[in-house]
Length: 151
Image (cartoon, rainbow, N blue to C red; front, side, top):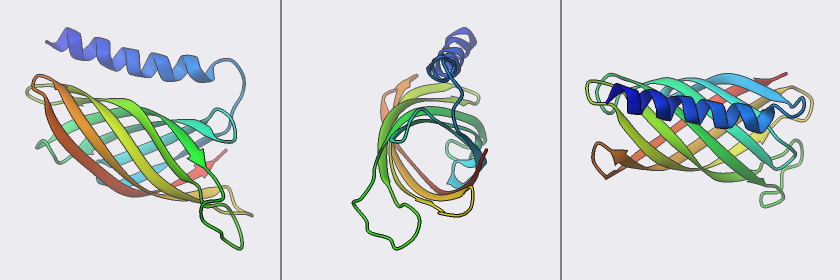
């Protein structure tokens, strides 16, 4: 059981690492508050795509360490703002929750992010539909608000 969870976590982290290893990219680091609550990182691949990572404490299921990695695609110009950028994004990824019975699943996030024009800060609001695959198949939801600093 633990071996399956460990392998899934390693695959999620390795796939994200391989996707960004080819050349230097922008990296954003911050926090997400909600379900889950914890650390958030975003590795920009280009202007419209990124890898989103989170390591967090999840309240549902009760008391678990939660990790996710998502591929995100951003759509600009849907919302007109006078300054900065306000892209809508969506994607697909994987989740691992380490608890008494570990879970592995898929995640389908959608969100909106405000990129400040003169500061390396972004704010985001995100919702995710999840599908737990192991040990049982069931739908899950997530959502949060966060802030990240871009290096």
